[in-house]
Length: 466
Image 1 (cartoon, rainbow, N blue to C red):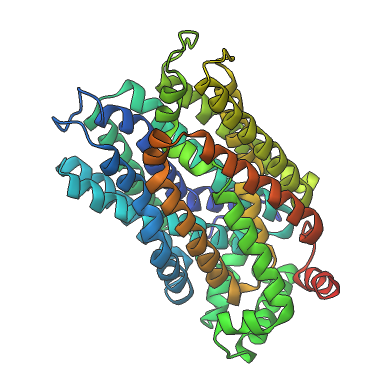
Image 2: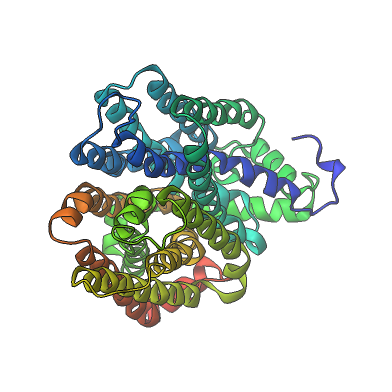
């Protein structure tokens, strides 16, 4: 942290470097999610590297278990972040990612698969709790929203990476490639600073000044560094004065409770927009849509890659648009488009069941729209919004609680998506996802305050009047 003089004073380069490295465990999490799409087709085929094809039940449990273990893991990661620091928690995430791929390299036993997928829940929790909190706390207000969108971007890059290597490399080659990323990250991130907010909380004021000076590319004696330190100390003092159990404080305080409801609705609506089962079962959904359709020029895996490219494009756009459009209307528009696309897709599957000729490209277009909207709006806005409407004291707990509740919905939809789709029809699921998105639009328009470039005090003043 001593090389700040290499850059122009006030440069954001060190914040970008730090945020980039913070997001590498999110990339590893994305590869875990994306891995399921090509591997579902491979492991259930006659050429399964396991020797025998996996059943729908086994695949469903593998896909859904991370969302079940994510529930307690969110509180574990929030606790670790608040007590051991954001940096130590992030290093723990990389160690877990390394373990996940190592287990799969060592054995193809179904119980080893399940154990590895259980561990994915920890990296998922960290990606949704630790990483966005860490990024928020190292970022200046002027780039907070843009950097906060990087979590969605790196998840998309990780998923796309798995889609691509899943189609071109052998089963074990994929694992050897993926295990290298967390190992390299663990070593490199040892040189990064911890969150200034955490350092202030621990009373390590000298380290906090050094961290701020490096992140802001300024001298530790710079008045702006001292002002920021005083602001963090004031925020910490205000939090210390309230010794109530945090969730109790949120429930009993009307303003905090309104903010919590906003964070909860945002988190749950993102998980129920349809993107989660699409990401996990993209190849399988395209395979289902391709039945009796010879007009598909691409294989299901390559169509899934197209989906990954669209997700990446949406994530790249989000970093630019979120600061220009604001949080409220970006979320409302992406929810609306996603909801309408899911309803169109459901109708396509329903009409096809009656042997009516339909365009084979409708599933591709509608699934791409859903994933694009999730990456460009729902995923980043959910995380950025929660970080902006709560102070340091509450961020970890609120992110953990909302993520835990949302994970329950994810677990059940992934566990039952394939069995129900094969028994009663996949269109029921897509109509449900569409309805959830459209209901969210109504809530966002009526209840969500704009948080762009606004202080916590200004946001709470608006919530008090609502």
